[in-house]
Length: 209
Image (cartoon, rainbow, N blue to C red; front, side):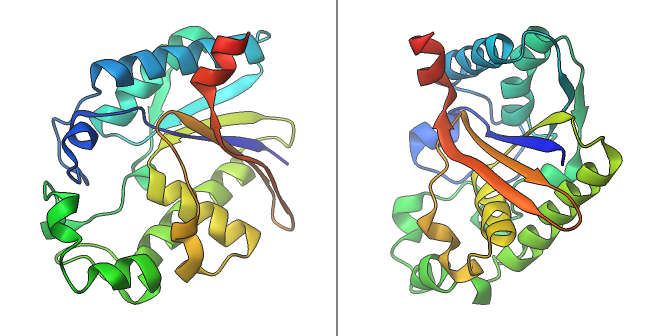
């Protein structure tokens, strides 16, 4: 089964401000985020010194591409933009503060019954889950069983993918944690799935080496 390393983008400017970036353009990594991305790249470079990572895919947004860039250098790969790895389309919630959104009655639905929620002017969590899982399933078909792939994407798509492939109900996916610049590893084929790790801090790995 191909092994897929799901890496969340590093810290960005909106995270520092407590706002939801969604699919807004022009959202870049913070100084800490650039450090996290570099540390993650160095950790991956040490983990895979023989260049056995076959492809590096990324959501097209700036914060994911900026996270993937040093990985491309460390691994000698080009970054392939893959729209299916995009963040959930949160529509009218883009740019809004989490503090303000938490006061809305629907926030409890987002946290406790996300399968019932559609972002105003945007996607449902069901939409996102179907999209990301289809992308990962397609990649597993396109690549050889021994291949290692990297997908730089966003927190909710990673959590939703893990929930689907491990049989966790969608309404419980918010219980999973995926930190900035962390790695989650899945092996997938048409009949089987293995979750090797979840939310591993790549920067911490680098610091220990």
